[in-house]
Image (tube, rainbow, N blue to C red; front, side, top):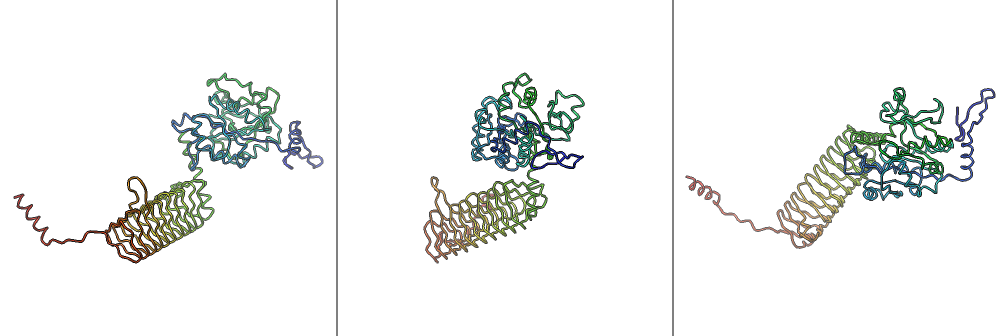
Length: 502
């Protein structure tokens, strides 16, 4: 056997030339595809509650690899067809699912009463009426790839079938329906036998029905009314369409994926953990292939959308989350948690830093135990050290705040030294106010800057000052009481206490 231009070819042994053996359905499909490209939609089953998760969160919103289950499936789908041709069928907590995934640009169809997978396509009938074919995916199976969806689509079109199901060989097929083919080499499906109905011999079979399908829309909706709810759950099962279509004389075929892991769904917390581990290890391997050093990758949590430059080192127990971007030649030390940050080249992040929605320029040094809250913009070569917290600040090139400091709602120039224990008092109980510190300022330790206030270029602030007024350029500002020394005061107090106790 061989393939030529996507058509099944069998070699003629006597003449050594290929001769096509094509079914009538295949001929019709080939002619139609030449006349005009088929209109193909993707429907994603995403209406279920997921009772085995025992969760108040809708099943398809549980996250693996840093994204909801359904978003992984949507991302695969929109690489096969435009987002406008993708329909997520939602039901349980529909508004919550819609709010979380509206940004994907796909369509949503409401299945108000969840009466099975067959019923889901019944309610989507109007939305899918204008298409020639519909690919059906599971919203809780996030490992499916665009390549497999494309192969399944192409196989269906070549076969000219009414229904194509995606099958897989599983080492442990327990719980899945088994696919019975007409013969070992045949694409045609004789039956799908559910686990509870399978004979001992059938239970030993490893080819399972994944729950992913392609249908001819005409054949699907021409026969979907024949589905029955005569089953223990009184639901319409899409799997039963295979038997319905076959009894109607329609062709039902199966295509087996070479990567069975991608059809697995997340039905329990343990299964979600397994999928999450698979995705994160795949991400770590991809980064390492791109030149990133990751010590003990199994200990790190790295989301799918994170990017890291070559020669960056990531130590154990680091979390890189969301859309974080890290440049080349950086060093991220253990126990740091970084979400949605942009980090330049050659940045050092010492242990225990927590950073979110912030920008760190090249050659900056952060930590240990620094907290960058949203809106922090740290300049080139700047230093933030032990137990420093920032929020909505701009810290200039080469500026330093190395110890025990809070900087919020502030613009700080280049070459500024902020002493230990400095606080910008940005909140008056009602409104937030800004602190402005110009280039080259020296802020002494334990300074309190009561915003709104500005410190001019090159000025000095004496230690332990409370600054409430603007400080002119190159001035020295002191805002503390004059020191008073009372000689012998401590000795007299100790004598008084001794006398009282005797």
